[in-house]
Image (tube, rainbow, N blue to C red; front, side, top):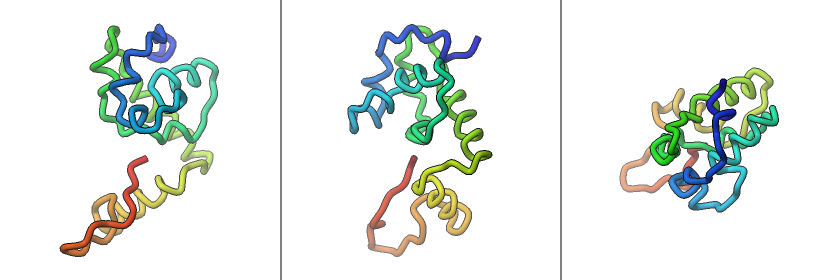
Length: 115
């Protein structure tokens, strides 16, 4: 049985998720993504995860949903469905060795891309 199918939807993961705390959107929460997985919905929302594993720490069952999120990202990549932010992040890592892009001493990057 997959981790998402084991999810009891208690919601304890929500307030440990940095993106949910910031954006307050249920679909961005680990619980929201688990619901999408249960319904076999693959969406770009799976890129909206920092893979920090705070949801696993907060989960009373210790579910590791991040592994399934990574699998969904891989499926989306194969279908050439990804986000602009994800494409830029990958390009920056390949070109500059970091997700921020070209870093100039004393300057703060104009845009930050994580997911």
